[in-house]
Image (tube, rainbow, N blue to C red; front, side):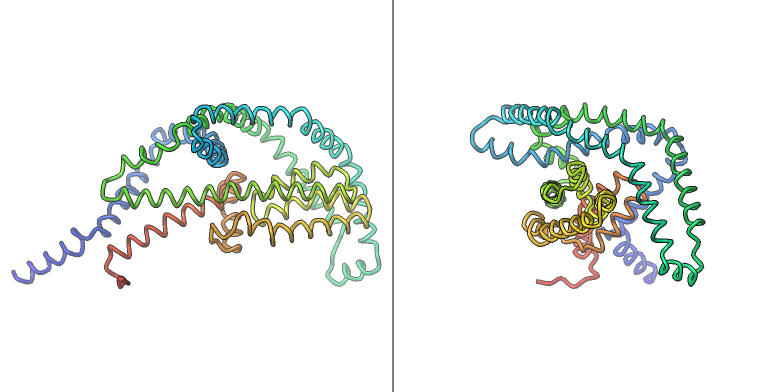
Length: 379
């Protein structure tokens, strides 16, 4: 009986009264409930539709909130009422949008139309250059040594292109649906953003009111650190992307590259994705420059190299700093994984999502170290 009582006390100490084991059992119970409910489609289908509907407007509103909230807080500190500050910001944004629609957008549209009209010419010139390269003596020797067949390669590329085109045409209805959802999201963003800017200070307190009193301070610290990570990334990355686009536009104008505005805007938009974005943006610039002349190609590569050096050595260290503390290799793997899982949206949200998850996991591990008793407590 003594052994039975000792085992009972030990079981209570290690399992029942152990907070970490209780936490694991709680997670297991939640996982089992989710597994059971996923087998009943009508339970999660409305939730999935709801998330797909509100996710994009919330993301866009959050991005603009982190961009505009410092201005709102600054003007509020100057004794200007918050609602008046938001109205002034909205008027400025409307003015900027009107300026873009009347001046910048027509120029971009004109260059895009010209670029599309020149695509057959570019394709023909590139094909001629490829055939000339494949007909050279060096390439013939190389092709014979590795048993390379250029005709077979061109047939493969043509088949792949046809397959991609057919797939694109078949998914046209899905594309139109995505465009409709995007337009609806853009229409609802100003309303959501207005209330976020107006009531943003109260949101953390409201969320924490659902948490137990014992963990509210810790939860507030976690939320504060997550918010800092997201705001640092959004503000910094957008400023860096704008600087890259501006510098490339100036450089392309100096060397006289065709469609410089479209190519610079494309580079600015794709630079939102770290490391992989610039590699994607350089492709159309390479095509335009190589078709123009070999000298223009060399000039474009020089301009691109200079801009990337300026961005890597001066702009990013000053604006982004080391706030995220994420290794570049980790960022690349995170972006590739998120892209395979969630598509374009996953690529855009990969880095801030990883930063938020890293904050949560690090705090959870600190809590585990403190509660499990498996680690020595350092003074």
